[in-house]
Image 1 (spheres, one colour):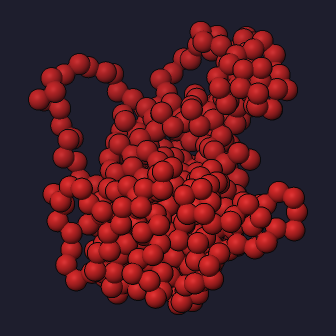
Image 2 (tube, rainbow, N blue to C red):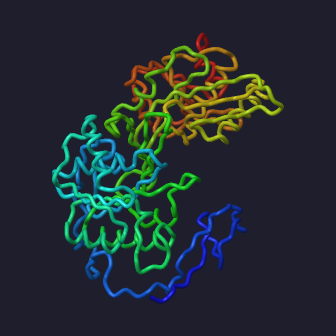
Image 3 (tube, one colour):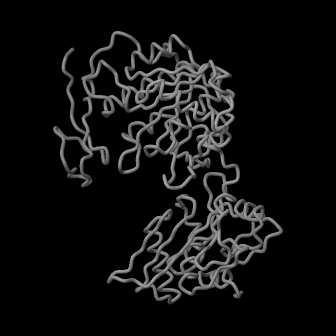
Length: 464
């Protein structure tokens, strides 16, 4: 077989080079160059890949499949993130840190789906015996309900041609690949997991899914930077990208959709890692608030939107006189830059003396909040700790904080308030509405404020 031509590509910025560089001169990142096959230098193939049929242009009006039914999943949180179920012919990529529960979740899914159709589970990292041990553990702890179904087939294989042959022979209803980084095409010189192999193997799985209507789940490893290896390669090739997030020292896991052609992006499913595997948490807001200490200074309740789902979470703030020259700003579950912004607004606009205080902010339960709607709750938690005055236990805080100390409205306020009311909260502090078009729910007291200072007064115990 003729030697193929390669070059090296920075995974961070895409810059190419003739040889691998330690530090990228364009983006400044270290150890990001990987080998890639040059366009046009791939060896010719004597057979069609991906089981695809010959293409044929057709009128849009004549296309079938726009209303194809989804394959229903008994794991409701998983189905929610996918948009209601598994779409035939879809290619789904699931990433996450090692040991976070990716393989466990897909094995549970395979065991639940096997009685309704053949599921082929291809592992490149574990033997069938190891997978069966995990399945028996899930069954023994009640994490699966259908037993070791006859429709679940296991195979340990990394050769792409062999995997495609297994698909031809078995004709499964669902295909699971664990993981895409272990699969290789024998006609390429590069090793498994390289950019060239990832691109070629993922493309063949894409052709297989689209040409036959077979739903395929790919498990993707995560790099030390926290992204799926080869993200720019894989994310645009698949239909859905899911990340399984969570702190390994916490029991909760969040399955987040960052791309979904068949449903809402940023949708989140909440699970609890237990002996029985990934257990659904149908009411995550209640779970996140279960161990909350009422009337404790530095504790505020924020209402964040994860996709279409409102979640109530406890934001904790703690201030302490610094023992060093420079005060610390530590954020867990919050963007550190957002913490710096809120701290600056509190010091400048409200006169709080934070220059000699270490500030710690934590989101309980391992959830990560990225939207600015939690700004008011974060500011209130910090101010409550500084003043050693608790916030109202029956009040939620919603709003974005501007640099001038003003409160700005956030989207989907009505959905947030409905969730707070359902969990028994009596009042909400939120930005003063300048437009009254949105119908807000009754039965919860609305305390509107124009500035951060007014909002803190309305939220503190004994104030307002």
